[in-house]
Image 1 (cartoon, rainbow, N blue to C red):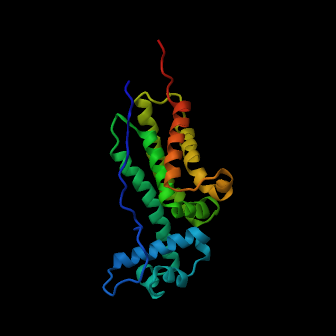
Image 2 (cartoon, rainbow, N blue to C red):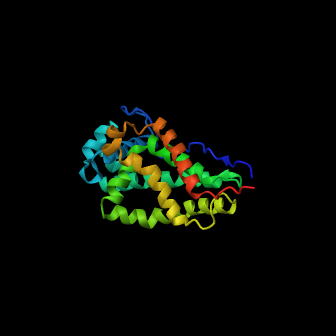
Image 3 (cartoon, rainbow, N blue to C red):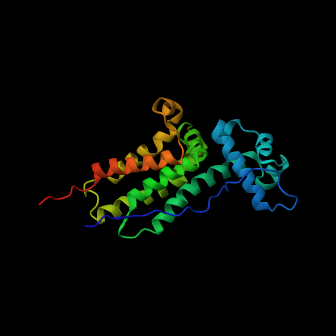
Length: 232
């Protein structure tokens, strides 16, 4: 069996455009202003948590008036719900785009490892929101996440494991549920734990680290989960 082709997914359009925040032009269209408010609220929520935000500081970060929050979202709660949904939808959508492009010869697990580490490095504030609002808080956003996103994400990742087992690259007795937990732990924990271990282990959660971590994780997972090569 030849080496499987590693799938390198192209970046999909992000729900929150990465752009410098400045004052909107007088002729700014609604989608631009709405996106600016979403980006400002997302970054602030990652820094301090959603429950501590005010409409005034969100508007100030987006360089718009507080009235724009009510105009585009109705209330602060509706804006923060939109932030949460756009964060979760973006993560799920990127995995879905990769799944749709998957071919029999593609190494789906390696591709997901690459995608997840890249995403963690490029959009750290989105994962901080999930850490603050879902893992660390037993509130309405945790319930929303479980009801709307967990099953979708689990089914996508389970399909990747089944794809690799059908191709004969993973052991048939591998439990996909435990495999999913292993991969998420190996890829996400180093980023989430950076405030604790970054200085001691001398790493920064940037794209260079993401590339090194992806290669390290692929090797660790492959050597533990891939079918052993038969010898003559």
